[in-house]
Image (cartoon, rainbow, N blue to C red; front, side, top):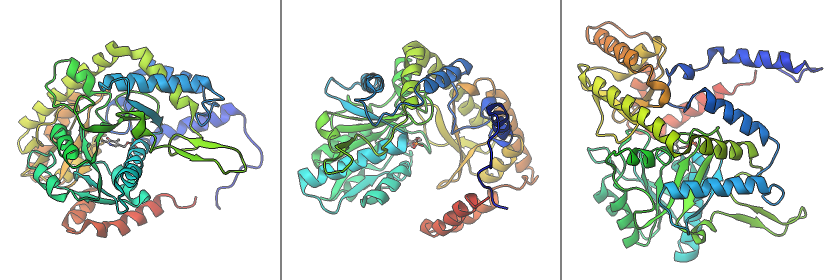
Length: 439
Ligand SMILES: *Cc1c(COP(=O)(O)O)cnc(C)c1O
């Protein structure tokens, strides 16, 4: 029988204990056994996020006039972010619900800017293939053609290819700092110079790095320039709910000045319901996400972020070194910070992933080339040694011909054999249908 709304309610305590039991089958992020999806900065931060979120759970960021509290916090969060990314006093932005929304807003702004300032009616977006799919999604939603350049052997976008693919219809050029798949920062200075030469809007996707790279730099890591110090960079997306350690539903999108940001806004003065002005994609905006982001930035301060960045970098260095000493495995390219991938010339890494799954780890699978993915957080300092031990044992067993437990290797093997990846779409649609079947 299909699930329906219960006839009468239950006491909140009973509902809560039922709810808490649902955790049982979830990814064990608290144990540091996952490498994406959760960025855990410790129990004290978690509690603060809950308290701050709860404090503003009812307030709605759609109306900063009704809630000057949220407006103040959002403006302060945007200012702090702009400062970290070396924006001057002209840099303007808004908070959004996450990286995808920040990216959608930047693409929409560039599209509208291209139409208004350059008369472009068939807009194109030019991106590396390592770019986050949120750009493909934005292109799909906003009627923009997306063109993927290719990667150079060092996993950064191939500049000659980018220059070749630029057309008079290109409204936006994108690089990532760093891209999710391999963690190798794209040549932002060179891309921005190309963009400037052709009068194109340059966006830097720093969803991952925006709240990490500034601290890595302060810790003395050699990093290529990527932020507003690079001439020609027009906009940056940076996720608070990743290495900003905020509650989910928090990101910023920043623009060189408020003139660029204007293309993001939506207004409608002809509604029966009154004058409508919405800064970003969502209408109602959860006040809790704004308050929690503001709270964690004030709680951690620069010192707290530096401490966590130091831990992440130390764990990453140890993991990369360890992986490179395991026969058959190697880290791909020269990743800059806490995100990287590793592959193999001798082993099937998907089988290796399945063997690690069986030991309770959860590593994301990647394609072209086949690889496993690590996104290191402060939670991994305590488990990096056992991770390396398990990885070495699993790789050793595979190389001696012991089969891996059954997992996703078969599926990835099949997908890998299909040259035209657009054919995978039907399969993925079926997958989503299945996930959200009626219960
Ligand atoms: C996570 C991520 C995004 C998308 O962010 P969401 O918050 O998941 O929507 C975009 N770009 C990069 C590089 C990311 O890592």
